[in-house]
Image 1 (cartoon, rainbow, N blue to C red):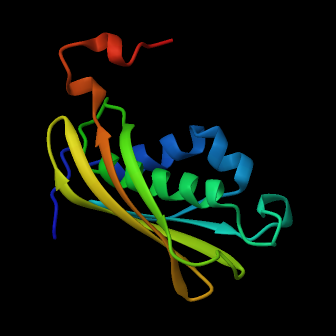
Image 2: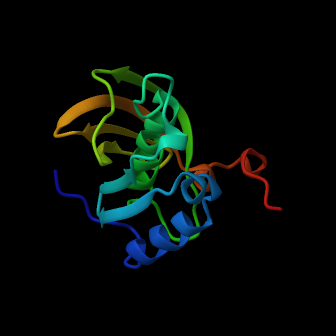
Length: 150
């Protein structure tokens, strides 16, 4: 599906916002692709991010999937907005192994308030996890208390 972003500077805004997300920095995630309605985030396998059997921890994979969906939605949101997760479901399909895990988030339906996205995480050449997520654009709400400025 082809989407038209509401902000012509969406890529610059997404990349700048990604740099502010401390958890992505903490785990060493990298923003790889930013297109209207599509974002890819990659993370190198690291021993300190694995679980007891040596696989990338499911919480780390879920974190990257969530951000891929959130930023895919954010590419289609207006300038000055922000994005938050409303809900998501993750299916863990196989152990996350290999040198890189890449999460590709894609918008399935973009609305003014809610955007539905999916994301797949690829590890070792196969899908290790998939997500269905709903994101919200809180700045489009009349109730600005949903996202207080600090």
